[in-house]
Length: 270
Image 1 (tube, rainbow, N blue to C red):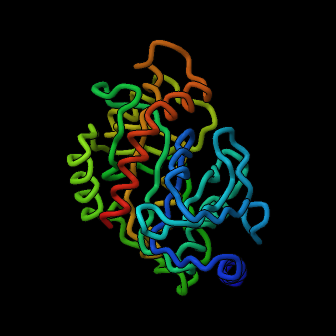
Image 2: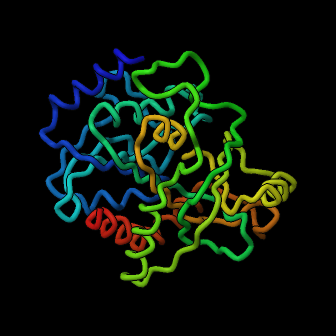
């Protein structure tokens, strides 16, 4: 694994002159942030050694290097999901590469279902904690101390300073947001009403099929994390109509402008 990560990192270092400290992962329908990136260098995943390929609609499958508000960034346009058939090491492979490449801060976004009845489609939620409902962990298996410790602490997975900075920026831009707990599960089927009731009782405010594995590994690697969910639909049992991925992408696109302005200004402040 370590040698594969070094090979991927070396390839990227040879392709770009950028050496960003901030990586941004874009969820379904949130790819519009790439329009804010200047001096772009775009590398499709299929060209990168050892990288999986994104197979989900709304995920372009590209690494985009460039600047946002003068700050160098690495943008991951499209992620990998456990439900695509990838194992957890493949799902989180980019985070290992981020660390070797010199990334210190990761901004992770997702489209999620609202499990908090005070939310509505279009709500933006800062993630202050998560629940791992995947039934597994990306850190299972032998541990390579060159990456991180065998038993990483998870008491502040989502960095409090980054959260406060995002709140300040939202206030300055007059962007409404909520704060809450994100629950990640394997998918790809949407949750049943009974499952959502259970998740709500467990303390979940939003539910989705990503982010948790990436955040576990980034935390393990010592990367600071800011997480933001775009609530694209209300979860089963709260929603009044069946779910569809098309609806998720549509609502994310509609909310995209606020999301992009928020992230772009936050990057500038960082």
